[in-house]
Length: 139
Image 1 (cartoon, rainbow, N blue to C red):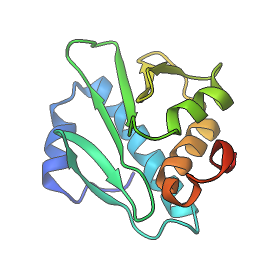
Image 2: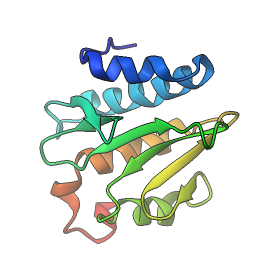
Image 3: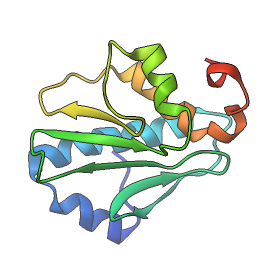
Image 4: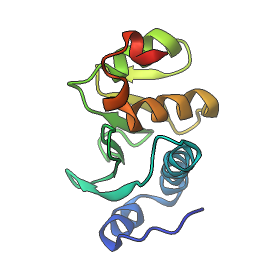
């Protein structure tokens, strides 16, 4: 697992209950792995946006992740709601994920994550501005 370089991001991860932190760290690693495996992504900035761990790339759309005390049995990946990302994910993987509106993929703590499908969703977000003009983002 890649070490968190930003101490503010590390602090947020450390506020999560242990069983949630482990789940969200898996999401974090999937974002970092997907970025490193793509020729279209050169760097990923790990920072906080709205107090949530966030991942930004040149030419991409921000990905955030978080867990909320108000919904203790779930955690989520958040995407820019002004993009076509989540609509595209629903079209392609509507039976694989749970969605909240046009902004997030929701995971229950007992879910098995479909890794390949999620990595593809992450890739579409990390390269969004290169794809946004394509029908279905080039899917």
